[in-house]
Every structure is written in C-alpha cells, then in structure tokens.
Length: 183
Image (cartoon, rainbow, N blue to C red):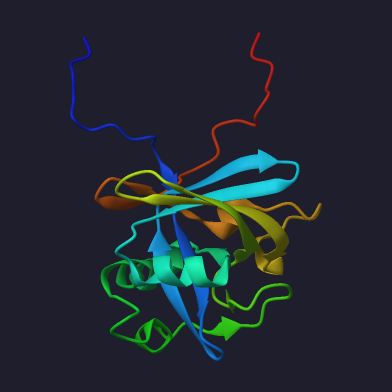
C-alpha cells in the first residue's frame, strides 16, 4: 500500500557539470542535478539553477553554457563543484579539471568529461527555489572511447552517474534494448 510522502522527485536525475564563461578569460563550473531533455528536434535541454548560485548570474549575463556529462571516475570533482562557490574559489584549480575550447560558445568544455553539449539559452522561467533555463544544443562532443562501432554512445564504457536525493549512483547493467517485443 502506498502512503503519502513529503518527497516528490522524478528519479533518477542525470548529473551535469555546467560551465559558464565569467568575463573575458575566466569561467565557472557548477554541478547540476536538475537536468533534462526537453525536445529532440531541435535538440533542446533544460537545467534548473538556484538564483543564489554564482553561476545563475553568469547564465543570465552570458545566455549560453556547456552541459558536460561526467563519468563515474569524476565523482570527487562533481561533488566538490556542487559544494564550493565559484564566487569564492577557482573550481578548475581545486578539481584539476581541464578547460577545452568550445566551437560555438565562450564557455569551455571539460576535457575529462566524455560527453559535452554546447548550449544557448532560449528562455528562462522563474519557478520558485530554482529557475529553469531552456537551451538549444548547438554542438555535441563525445570522446571516442565511449563510442561503439556505429558511433553511438556505449553507456557501459561511459559510466554516467545519476543523482538521487542526497546520493550519487551508477547506472548498472543494461536491462534490455528499448522497444523490445516481449510477447
């Protein structure tokens, strides 16, 4: 029997490291767990950011960002970028992550993240505790080591993380291909 609960979440959530340009030569990294696909054509994503976060102001100023999807090996950097404010410290220096030039936005890719999406904000919605940034994907970048022979992402090689309230999780093994006929 189900009972009423105060927790209301969509589970699990992808984990992203969002980079935003800060001035002419600097940038910030913020860990975001409220990440989602919004549309497949044109490819559009969403990120939800608290207005109190340093990156929120940068997102409003710049209107663009890179959504970097880390693998499990970056757990320590992911957690650190969610706990420390970029207004007080240089997260690139703290984590040892490497900025890499993007093609169409000023924010850098994170070289250690196997998958990155360059994004331009098309709308921002004030929702309450978080503001939702809706963005078009301008370019996608994947490390060759996570691609299979057909050029598709091999999730076992990639090992992206998921966020559940108060904890990070691995995704585990594939259960079945989507659209499998089980009759």
